Length: 305
Image 1: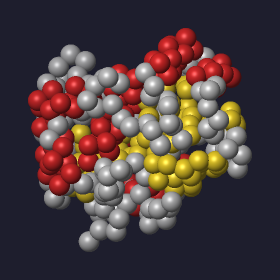
Image 2: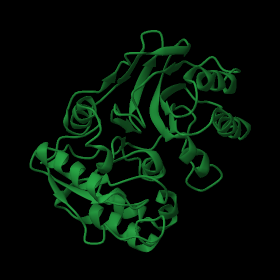
Image 3: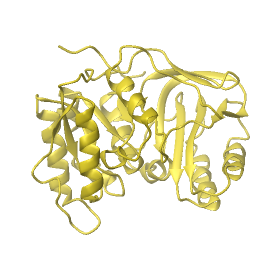
């Protein structure tokens, strides 16, 4: 039985966004420019004192990064949490996370790439909608379309609808289910752990960057051999920047799912690109491959006080 879905409260101009660094350290200039973008949207920004810590390839020790994140969930004045950067490190926090505290203080959590581990784990453990969207350090280089889609996803009471400009139907059909997924590499690294996300009955969304076609093939083969693709309702493909010719990537996906008749639609502006639209993880949607659309059934947020 599906657990009840928890929607965070909407973000409005004047509300406070807390910044977390659960993964790698980041470029200060790109960060400052991203903060300026958020402030230009009308939001206040809270920067924790330890945000700029470094420990090798991590933004501080695991205990420090997880404490920072939990404090932002507990802080009643913070209405949303944005992640500074991906890279690596989010999955190291999962056994340290206090999911009860997160469940008790639901709020918007936004990020992508390595942050996928947090998005899907919190959705799985808490039944809370999370948001696959831009990082603070990508905001300045992201397109206006990306910024408008972010505001729409976390602040609008209208159900979201996505229709790729260059949609490619890899397999026709229509299906519905809760959306789950994100970065393919991050998802594969969660398999076989207590934090692997549920795929059965879900619309599976995948994106990646800088992975050669044979590595994409290896990861999809792992998912297939482990039975993780069994029962997937449909597949949505975002950007695969620097992963070789897109036709090769799409052929690999079709091969991995050759024994199913589920709809597969590629071409979504989701992931590592200047167009990186925000989508809610955990929310019910309908995928219509032939119409080239992904339509969510309800708003991703609830109206707050």
